[in-house]
Image (tube, one colour):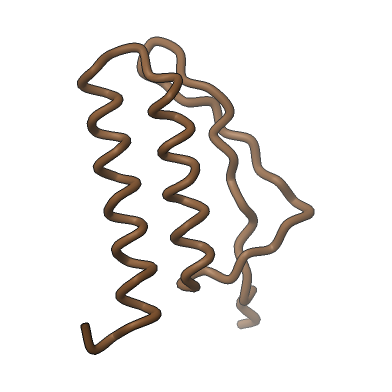
Length: 80
């Protein structure tokens, strides 16, 4: 079985009524598990937070962004 070593970036383009629309960018491979992969997820969550329709959704997305960023840091500095 041949596995792909990359994933395609999924872009969350907007939030309406608590649901995100997802578009996949086929032209931009990102290695899953890399710090850049996690940071891209964090940036996406922050963009979604800016568009969130409720304070609860905004807070949840900001917390998700912080978690993705923490994962990136742990990968770069495993002994911390």
